[in-house]
Image (cartoon, rainbow, N blue to C red):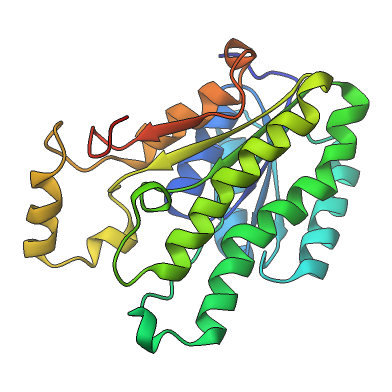
Length: 247
């Protein structure tokens, strides 16, 4: 999977899955525009990429803010001249049972997880159309496919990303632009590290492969969908869940 000459924009790149994906895309040869709220973490990641001979630049961006998305995408396009690959990875949770779920927590999760993806696509799609080549990858979740108690807002946002993925795939496919989604299951991240041991063991019982996934497992899937090898795949949801959800 050779991405030399390609430019990737990764949101939520400062940690976890986003960081692993940025490193993997850079390893494959892409120049990477790193976007997240923490400028310090982004700059550390950019240094790690350049130390290995890659090319990266950081762009502080809160994807919950439309103006910051527009400014960040504009700066990335000015820096690199184009965006070939967009990974909409940034996401948050505000978990609560629906009867207690505040409207502000619903709005925050939908804005960060779903609306930001639409806004980022809107900002970079012109570059992809001009070059008649593009790869859009949206980070959804197993819970966008099967739901999860206490996560009505999160599950809705991730299910919405699947619909967005298919709509965009149909809209821009004729221009050699693909749009796919990756749906991780339980992945070893800071979020899952906070789970109690009982919850962790319950999750493992439902995973045929018998382990939690890693950020690198997800990064491999993203890099594949961003590559030329995946040129005939679009509108697809690639499950990376160890078999927890099949079909």
